[in-house]
Length: 137
Image 1 (spheres, rainbow, N blue to C red):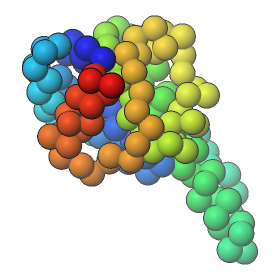
Image 2: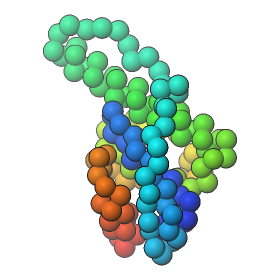
Image 3: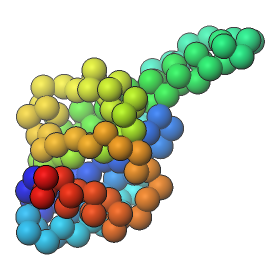
């Protein structure tokens, strides 16, 4: 996968999002961290309160799904507004599945690729390495 200069790389799971910008070019990937966006403005209410452990687990999953939807809401807004030209999404497998359900057609058209892997909290060098592996695969 060729990753042009300026590509936004969004790394997410069910509770966190990290953004990186490719300051390099297609042959020399160089990710730099960006400030975390305020995605809560694009979120949805995660539901009511529960008491049993099974219900607590279900509530936790609902909250993760709501966060994934809010992340995509923010990404959709940015792509529709012309602020994202190229995008790569890296997310924990369950989160990525939920995120895909909310992609706007504009986001889909700017999406260069996806990686279903948990990489939140990892340094830019680790993410670069994983993306380079995709390029050689």
